[in-house]
Image (tube, rainbow, N blue to C red; front, side):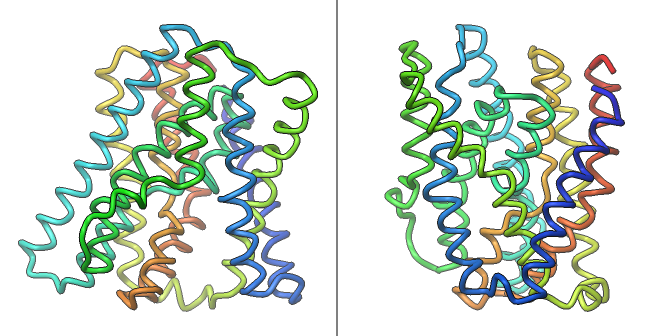
Length: 309
């Protein structure tokens, strides 16, 4: 993979984001409409994106790689969460700050940013690894992180989201070698392809709703960005180097783990009034900085994994 392709794809992504910023600034999409589009994207379009991957043929080696990817993601995200909670507790950080920082550092934006990016860079196999990321994200977020925000108990039912159930359906179809009839596959793929422009436009609208200059004045966002965009991907590289996987697949998993802070953190911080400004600013700053961190991470991954240029 040439760095020219990577930079070109980053430009495409930020052009979509620029469209969202323009739509937000001009009042074409207001905050309420953005929330509706976010729900539409996650509850309707994302499931179609996942199910469109049923056209793939995945052999035993492919499922082995999928299992390895899931294990790596559990190790990296789960380890990050555990270490973050311990370190911030040892530093006597206030509970709300510890909860917010742990979520910001642990959870990457695998779906709204990682999926369209990885599909463009790695092809349809990216959807399969997104399934691994989606399962790991949902299990850790809704069983461990959400109770930290709400102060409630673990709710296993919260894991059973539409994307999670769709992921299970896809894995069953791939394991049994089932495929959609051609007309159905056309419809599923067409709807699923909407994930790229819509999710990136939503990110742009979210950026337009904030004072970007105020974000750069907040010191904590630099710590979040350094950890989420650079340190965590570096640690993920070390783990991936020891795993027997195709180098290109390793790079795809790395890009998912290197994504900026997840927008879900902002949503729950606002709902529970736990550091909402810090979370919103950190998510946005991490997303903006992704234009710089992504080429660095991919170049390092290519070098360490021996990916051909």
